Image (tube, rainbow, N blue to C red; front, side, top):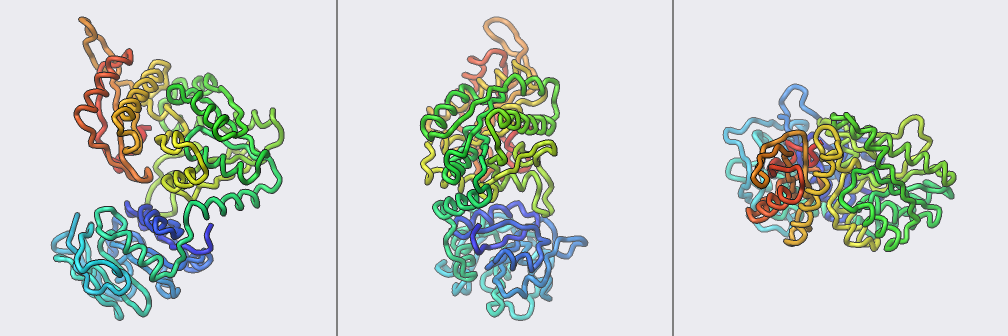
Length: 512
């Protein structure tokens, strides 16, 4: 990891990860930490600036999350965003009150000082507000540098201590010049060098793998997705022919995927690939299992068993490389923030006690968009780079309830139709994920001249930047009509087709 960073302290805000990503877009490394992080920890991490995220609480509530006030005396710049501004004000002797008129949505911001935080930005801009409290009285040394119609303290500053606060959210796309504001803080005020880019990440990661594994053999789990493929190519650069990749077909892949993946990894990327068809083994274990979390645990543990068995056949492997990403780590284990665990990812749940593998996760501090850029720099084919994210447990988490042969067939064939329709219409690359979901719900349809009871298929198409949040795609009626017509007409056993219009949050992208 880089020698310096911007630390983002997470107070449970829905945009906390987005702040981290925006800083990285400025080519500055940033890491999301719990709000309980100690001042010494920030110094040990070489934090050159600290951002206090937003959050759902009010600072005057009993039990509201608070950081250590010593952070403001470390001598490094601090930027408080929304709740972060209010917390800074309260901890330093100011007063926060509830607003008479809450601000939510796009709000005109009037800037009175553009010397540092707002450098290069016009005197008036649109900002995204979401707050019911405001700083009524500022601590000694602070001044107002921007205001809105309903919030006179929309942006504040103590220039002598390099403490800043904004009541709006510069990290969201709705805020004009938001990225410039973050860049001004990260590079101008905090003085971070812009060294976080694909080439530097590749160099650092390859060196990290080499120093970690030494002269040992490495086994890499590959699925054909951009995460595991990028991990494999990085590991290949680091250890050369001491890398062996294993592609396990668990019987829950997309249509024809096992053939496509083998061709891409073997022929195009020249990886030393070992293919294992364990489909019947996995499907047998899933018989009768309906709980989504149990499915994930069964599949994750069985993966490790397969790797252990294959390793014993091929030689001595101490290391297992996996394509775990930063959002996977956060969703599975949390950061110590007020956020709760969402779901267990099969590759971050920890290695069972009976396994002797040691894990390498070279991408565990990266977001999906960063991995795609790195993959392109490494020469990974576009067919892999641009493929929609696919869950490790495969179609098992797109089948609600028991994984039966019929439901698996329907899910696989319907999903292939969804991808085909979007590809032919030039829409595939403009969305984050698109697939079909099938469960146990049935509905009566008319096929030919006969009534027939069949499955309900739900089409899910979402847009997202990193998978942490997502919005359902506003697909045209013509696209929906083609999806419905083809799925109900080409996939036996389907009578109804529906479209999912719930965003994340409150839903997750995958149904299970």
